[in-house]
Amino acid sequence: MQLGTKVKNNTGNSVSASASILCLGLGWFPKTPGGLERYIYELTQKLAVQDSVELCGVGLPEGQSNLPMKLTNLASPDSPMWQRLWSIRTNFLKTRIGKPDAINLHFALYSFPVLDILPKEVPITFTFHGPWASESRQEGVGKLSVFMKRWLIEKRTYKHCDRFIVLSKAFGKILHQEFQIPWEKIHVIPGGVDIERFQPNLSPNLARTQLGWPSDRQIIFTSRRLVNRVGLDKLLEALAIIKPRVPDVMLAIAGRGPMLASLQQQADSLGLSDRVKFLGFLPDEQLPVAYQAADISVMPSQSFEGFGLALVESLACGTPVLCTPVGGMPEILERFSPDLITTSTDASAIAEKLEGVLLGKIATPSSEECRQYTTTNYDWHKIAQEVRQVLLQ
Image 1 (cartoon, rainbow, N blue to C red):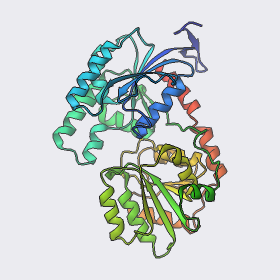
Image 2: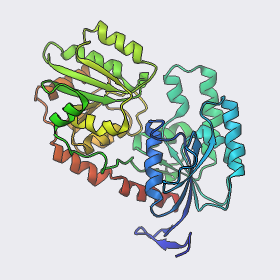
Image 3: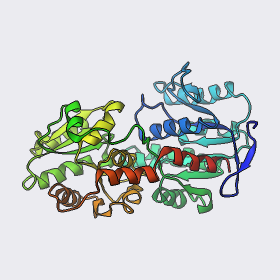
């Protein structure tokens, strides 16, 4: 069958048996280990099994021939912003050969320089990973910068797009209310997890031995970028609250970010130095091991958590997760273990649930139940096919 030949899918819509898909992303995973980068990395690899996929981005490796998709690096992430955006535009123009069947954009800033040179007859799907300007404001970015991000970049970019994918109903609501995108253009498709890589193939003791973690303490694990909105300061407060009643527990925090020094200082001031381990950047191959080494994972986010990839990664490894009622995270747990969703984002609410779990007062799902729920609902192979149907509809 020729590239672009159309067939009917099970919904009656026409979908290419094999298609040409152009994706414009951000950085390169695992060099840039963010949730958005991981999402694009996994999605494009799964799509490339069936389709011809080109991924454009910033800081992508060049000359790699062992990948199923074509990589086109448009700029250096270390160059000044104005130069980076100009490079994106000029290099995108230079590298265009043929016309794709579908275009999938993922980041407004890097999409903006090429909007007017995208082929107008090709449908554009924007995967909305979060309100960029609002997230910047949350982290203390200046008002002028927030204004420009929202009105100059985000609003203009979204106006060029034909349809949208969001990873949760919560972010669909933001897209509809803040950017006036009609609901009929919004498709809710959750993120996925690589169930071959994230799986319960080690005993907790063996996992702890590999990482050098103690075998005689309960362990809480969280993998987060160390920024304000992820709520690690609230988690430290919660740990201090339960300390008198749960004296022998360790919190392992993986990740880098600007709040590292303040979080370390907070842990010291709360008398938690012997209970909190800052792991720094955890190599990607050790992440499944860390999930399996923990008794429970925690996602204490305070705002803008569009999906919560770490939740399904932990569940795929057989480890239950506790989360705050923020963004798309409750949409993952409410059908499975609603008792592990805190009543609020406050430290006291996190402490209440955490204490209940660690003392056995709140039942947690078994490793087998966690794994089964994830493979049924969040396997990347299934998620990628759902995304593909939207891209090619």
